[in-house]
Amino acid sequence: MNIKTILLLCLTVGFFVSCKKEENIVGKNIVPESENIELQYTDTLTLSAFSAKDDSIITDEMSLNLLGFVSDPIFGYTQASIYSQFRLTENALNFGENADLDSIVLTLSYKGFFGDTLNPFEIRVYELDESLDIEKTYYSTSTLSYQSENLIETTPFQCHLKPNTVHKNDSVQTNPTIRIPLKKSFGKTKFMDKSGSDELSNNDKFLAYFKGLFIQAQAINNNGSIVYVDMLDAISSLTIYYHNDQKTNLKHSFVVNKSAERFSTVNHFDYAHANTSLKKQIIEKDYSEAEENLFVQASGGIKTLIHFPYLQNMFKGKKVMIYKAELVVTRYEGDYSVFFQPPALDLYYKKDSTASTSYYLPDYLMGPEYFGGIYHKQTNEYRFRITQYIQKLLLEGTANYPLHLVVKGAATKANRMMLYGVNPKNNKNRLRLELTYSFINE
Image (tube, rainbow, N blue to C red; front, side, top):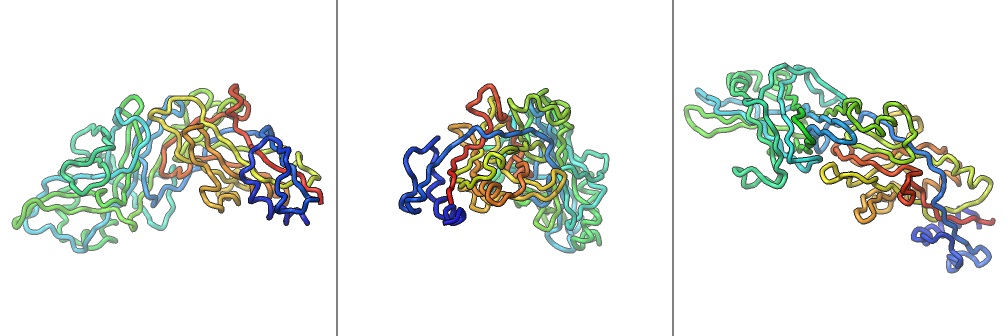
C-alpha cells in the first residue's frame, strides 16, 4: 500500500488526535496489521514571524464602508472616510410650482463600530470635484479631488454614536443612524433651482452634474471610534425636505444603490503615533522584539508573515503522513475593552511578496468550520487547521512560501490585535504549529 492510499484512509481518524506520543496503535480497523501506525506529536517546530504593513486593499462596492477617527494607544491614528455617488430614483425630477427648500439632510445607517463610542469624532462633508467611475477599482489608499467648502450646516458636527438606539421619528428603522443637516444654500442651489432641468433628467446627466460627496472624519480628542456604514441601506441617503404651492411636508431622496460607486479611504498616518515595538517592526524593519509580540490590523493596516523554514528538512528523505496540523495564534495581553480583537483572522500565501495575487490554502476549501480562524474567548486563541497544506509541502515538495496572517474581512472592519510571537516570555502562549504525524514504512 503506497503512502497516498494510506493518507486517504487515515486522515479521517487522525484529525482528532492530540496526544504527544500515542503508545497504543491507532487504525487497526483500517490498515493491515503489518502497517500499524504510531502517532507522534510536536509543537516545537521552528517558526519565524514578523509584522509588516499590509497591502492597500480594495474597498469599493463593499457591503459596509468605514467612517471615523481612532487614536489607539498601540496602533496610533486611523482615519476612515467615504467617497460616494448619489443617484436619482426617478427621471425628469420636478419639485413642482414655486418649490422651496425646508432642509437637506445626509443620513447614514450603520451596522456596528470599533472603538470608544463615548468619545465623538467630527464629520465634514464636501462636494466632489472628480467623478467616480463604476468600472474602476478603488483602494483603501485611493483619493479624489473635492471642493473646499464644508457643507455641514452647523460646524463642527460632532458624531456622538448611540449604536443601541434608533431615530425617534423612524418607526421602521432597524439600524442606528447618523443624521447630518447640510447647508440650505447648497440644497437650494444644487437641487431645488434645477427642478425640471436637463441636469435632473436622468442618472447619466445627474452624475455628471453632481459627482457625489466626500464624507470625511476628523479627530476631536481621546480614543474616538469608527463606524461601519451601510450605504446600501435605504435609510442612507441625501434627502431634501421641501414644499410647493400644492403641498407641504414633501421630500425626495437621492440614494446609494448597487449601481452607485462608493469606497472607503483609510489613513494610518504611517504609524507615526504607534507604540515603539510596532514601529520597530513595520517602519525600522527591526525584528528584535518580534519574538515577543506581533501585530495584525484591518483596513489595509498590518499583517504578520509566518514561515516554517526547517519543516521540509525535518522530514527530508522520510515518508510522513500528517494527521493534524494546527497553527495556533494567541492574543497578547492588553486593553481590549473598546479596541477589541478581530472576530476572525484569515490566512493565505503569495508566491512573491510584491505580487498582488493571493492564494488560499487547500484546507480553506474544506469550509470555515474545518479551516478555523475564529476567535475563542475562553482561550484567547485563533486556530487554523492546515493539515492538507503541510502534507502537500512534504509529499509533493510544494514551495514553502510564508503565510500571511490578516484580519478577515479587512475592507469592512477596523479591529486590530497584538499577538504573541514565536518565543515570548510567556512561552505557553507562543505562536506555534501543533503537528500530529506518523512515519510510513512502505
